[in-house]
Image 1 (cartoon, helix red, strand yellow):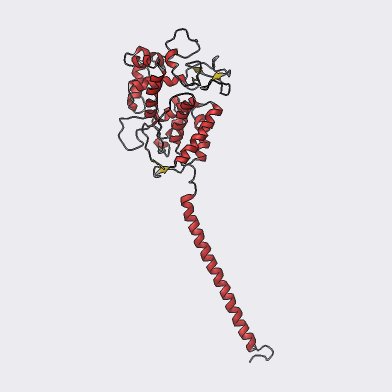
Image 2 (cartoon, one colour; image 1 turned 90 degrees about the horizontal axis):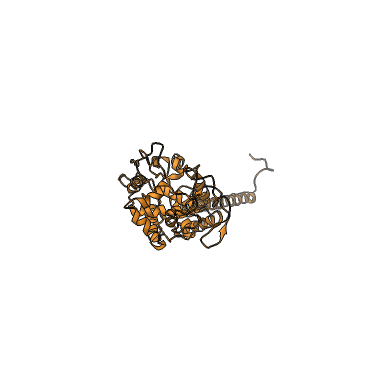
Length: 361
């Protein structure tokens, strides 16, 4: 029996029941709130999967599109880099060396035939002899990829090249974007598919090559072996050679050229708008005096005996006039409009070699 002093009164009993009911109700409300919160979190997470920017470098062959707004943003950033650093020529070389590995005779599935697939950013390709100095160009473009991860490296490299030429006074190139990136070093092309400017120690141009031999007794024969393997013709070879009007050769990269010349020693050089700049890294040998302007002066300088002896005239340059099939194009391109028309077409073709494209939305 309860002690009379401790026996619960009927009033206390009903109070206790009410309290228990209240606590239960609060617990239930908390439980409901948590359920709703959990559901909301789940929803947010799944919505996020569609709207959040993907992790840097995650774009693979499975993604189906790139936004035009991102391409425009990337182009704006690239234009700013070009105007600040005047590094258009090295961007042209980067893009060409990415796409120039292409072998049109390889019919296996992409990306077996090489080309403009962004594989140049990986080791071992970036460390191939012909690519000396290009790791720096990849690095300059890295912030563009960071800001616009959905734009492929392959597109960024080709865009930087085309914009470099256009901003230097060159022709407008009808570029196509949406390239899918190579995803790893196993997609790199073998070494030896790119052109040589001068003969090797044995007096021959080229070598055993990566996917096919590029070796030839003559510079013209070597150029044909390299560019015909890409699927490009004689007119394209001469037109693309005309891009030597833009930029310099360096002894520590291609093994050609002087340490510096009177045109590249840090003194002012002309830009396309007629102004001058000293904001470039000194060094190397140019083919023409105004080496930051893209025009057809290559085709009027190489053949001119009276030009400055510090300007480059390589065997692979001179052969364009000496070869009977190249000759007519080399002479024709002394006319700037004729050169620009052929050049824009050849540049576009080169920029799309081996590329796999996806949609632009």
